[in-house]
Image (cartoon, rainbow, N blue to C red; front, side):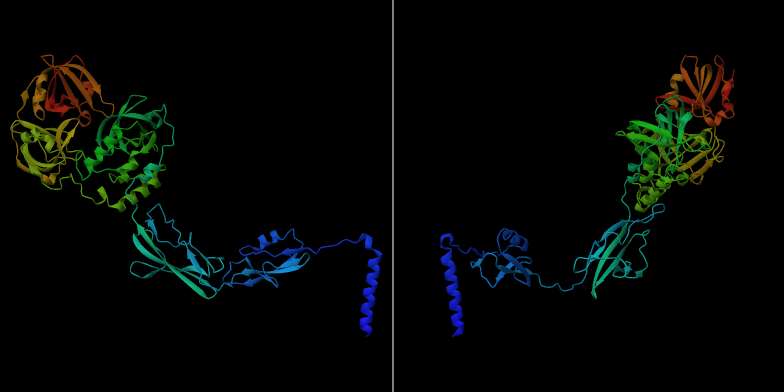
Length: 560
């Protein structure tokens, strides 16, 4: 009873106050907010939506497998569309992903790889660990060491080896292993060691660094030159652009197959390669190295550079990379030793050309085709680079080389620098395995070997015909005599002791007499005096479009 009396007293008191403020009373409407559907909204987006609304928002993360992590699930205690008073606290559930279960590590970067075999001067550079990584189930990197490592390496026979032999062609299987939370991942990778491609990558990347403009090779050790004639793949004749001097160059750092006195497989092709390269070159530059400028034969030694499309290229090196020449002595070069060492080793592995291939145009027979000298001369182009067997009488000998005559036709046989005491004038011989070649447009045979010579008879007479200068073209390869010649001039060679005597015969025909470097040693040029008269005999040879008499020795000239 007392409780109800108290309530009544309060109500009456309130009515009394209201009665006191009737004039200032205003009606206040309670404001509410309608809760919107927040499906698909993230927590950040929801916070942004309620940032200017007088509501307190509380979030609670709840695991959900059906709703994207970080997005709205539902209102707690309210539903979409409910109205809530401003100032109210609204709780919202936000989805979170189920806890991640540990899984085995992931190894990446262990793809199969092909590696070029290493050679001397170019050690292995491939790193089995480079680029290979592993991560755990949380995406954390697993460092190399106790938890990421190479488990084993096996060769092609399945045998476990300590390491890959990068100096030998082969196939290896490398097994990588990574560990995390007692879970293990194993990945196999195949490493194949192969021969480098047959290319000129070293020549392509090498450039002449030294300046050569306005310099002379003879004087300065570097300078621009021009071609005068070709010999073979590692010997060429040049003219110095600055001084005008002519000289022979033996290419430094290489040894090419023979294509002069001897013929080897790939020799002619190598010589032709050099001819084609230099004939098309925009410039040719010779570069010396060291104090020894010449070899024992008086030839200059040089690195031969040529310019193609404005770029310098080292022909010596290109011959090695094209398998047209062996690297010889290049390792000692301070300029290019390492480059030659690596290039030669890589090229040898390819087995190309001089390193194992058969030269399709080389005659591998020992004897060659038996043929008469007149038939050989008539159809000479058919036999160039081929081996032949010829017979005849030795009619003259110039140095170590001979002239062989049969039935009124003769031909020059170049024997090089090897002593040929077994070949004497008047001997009738059969020689096998000679190679037909054209030198300074003259037809000749080379590749002589004593083992391929058969002596048929000795002391055979040699016919010597007296002719005039205008008949020399009809006697190429034969021995002739000029009775009365008037010396017009004497000209020394630019490259060695050889010289040429120009004379006139009784019919005012010009006769060129050639004294080669060998004969000049005991028949000095000062014996030939302009205005004096001489009689000479010797074999006739062609030199480009002209003819000359080769003077074998002092016994072949009579000074009148």
